[in-house]
Amino acid sequence: MRSSARWYSTQRGLLAAALLVLFPAPPLAAQGGQNPGPWPIQMGRPGDALRPGERGTSNITMLSHVPLGGYLHVADVEIEQEESRPFVYVSRRFDPTGFDVISVADPDNAEVIYRWRIENSALHQGSGALDGRYFKHKGRYYYVQSTQFGQGGPDADLGAIVFDVTGLPDASTVREVGRIREPEVSGGFHNIFMYKHSDGRPLLFTTTRSKFAHVYDMGRFVEGDHDGALVARIANPETVYWALSGGNGSWHDFYVGYDLATGQDRFWGGGRGGYFVFDITDLQNPELLVSITGVAGVNNGHTFTPSPDGRFAVGETEYQYAPLRIYDVGSAMDAGRTTIRRPISAWTANWQNLSHNHEVRWPFVFVAAYEDGFQVFNMFDPFRPVTWGFYDTYGGPHESRGENNVNTGGWGVDVRNSDGLIVVSDMVTGLWVFRMEGFEGWNGLDWGMPNLSSVQDWERGPAVQAVSR
Image 1 (cartoon, rainbow, N blue to C red):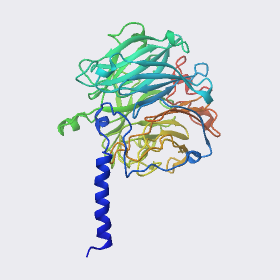
Image 2: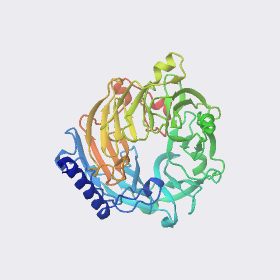
Image 3: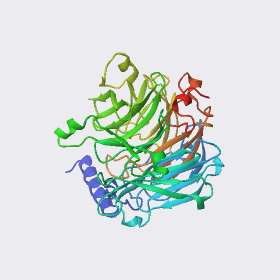
Image 4: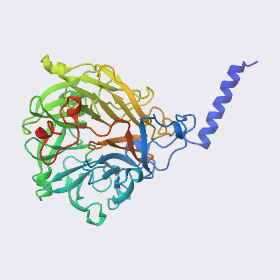
């Protein structure tokens, strides 16, 4: 006679098999860069079951939600910093790929005012548009849209497309300035970063499918010197190690900023092996200052963002259960150490999930946390970070892309420093606009820090910005 436990196990197995027939697991093509199609039906992996009134903490107010359509079709987000230019750019991955411009002139009623899609989108392979950054040069405003297309379709050598967006909100004035192509390094640019160097140049830093990050002088580019725009390359220091093991050193993401204490321009890069900090004041001769390698659980560095004074840095690595780790870079430099082997602390919204892109506005870290949506933690004490607030933008099923894949939900986050407006892009649900109680703008000087973040002072440069209100 069978025991009740054995009988229950058998019936559960039969039920699971029946459900797989009725509701097959979602295709994993999205992980390989192909168009993922509609939302998959995933049984047995419930979401967080939060009701609408419980989606966030009381200190986070949701002002607007703009659904943009498509499962996994939303990527990164960028907001212009001048309140007179209330424009948010959202990258749209897969087919049809391109970007949307959303006006937050009325933050309570955000609306799409412009859409751009690449020609013959359905013929393109790969993820498409992933990351976007804006910059200002000689009184005009530009938007750079990174692309990542694969072999077998058009534009495998295309890394980014540059648009003049000075005339917004008049959508008819948006025009394409040019395209950055790298035929010798096909596969496009996964991530990009715009930085106003202390020498005055607006520089675009890009990842490539190689050991190098490329650096482009965008002043030259928009003035017509497309061939002379590539001005430097920065190699991942782990290239030799990975070549010996049969792989290839490469970059995934980075932050570039000014260091007030030393007067250096610094490149903070995450990639194969971990995280690396370079002095790029002399762009032609980058000097490696610190390596964060050999850290338990970190073979590849992803998003890497320092505090305004460069003393601490938040590092992300991309796998389920990985927390954001915090590293004490300043103490290592003070002691003359060039290698860091362990973090001083870590933070996670939910140990079962994973956090993604983040923005540091000391002491707050604003996080796009995939399945956990929008999160904020406070690292005033970097050794003891604490959750400060959240709003669940995703709300869908856990592991909807398959077992151990939690890369769904909040992708990107950005903050407008002048008034503290927060925008979040969700891969499934679109664009969200928030305010956080008590956060009505940010200037590092108010916190005893340099006034430095991912936000650039395109007119005066970083040395003046660091000490200005």
